[in-house]
Image (cartoon, rainbow, N blue to C red; front, side):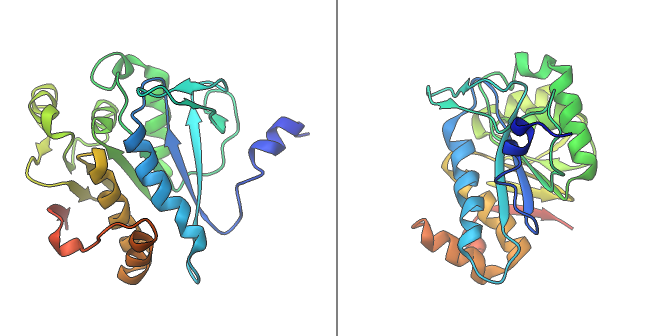
Length: 221
């Protein structure tokens, strides 16, 4: 029998929507979290589409602290809770993504397990290091934060890494340069799922200029 706390965790998970999980941890950078979160959350205000449930997952039920100092309360503890099926996994960059986070085997296992079932797995900025360390980008082209391209190539020398684009889409994986350009990668995924007109509406709602033809990007066919 489900406890009240378990029921409460599912309260905002509406049926008939894409479930979008954001993997957060201490040191998560605000923009790489809030940019895609804003875009995806606003799909609930568009008509005649399958909108998104957005929620935070972490290895704790306690608040985590972003790099900039904001306290976030995870919706689910992936080490303890029964999670809803995840259609889209988002990995925002975090301060330890080039170092200590890559030693977290439980986190990497969670990412691998979710990836096996998810429709899309996306990273922003150094979140690509997590995907690479989990072995998910071995056969996929990718990119990361511009200042960390050299470190990325050095750590994963067999990977196909692009440094002249804001995001790369290869199979189910979308990796982005991050920062404010996390908006572009997120709008792109919405354009893939919903079409250009909906992506334009989402962009206009957040006062963002959106024209995919003007965004340096790579789609691997």
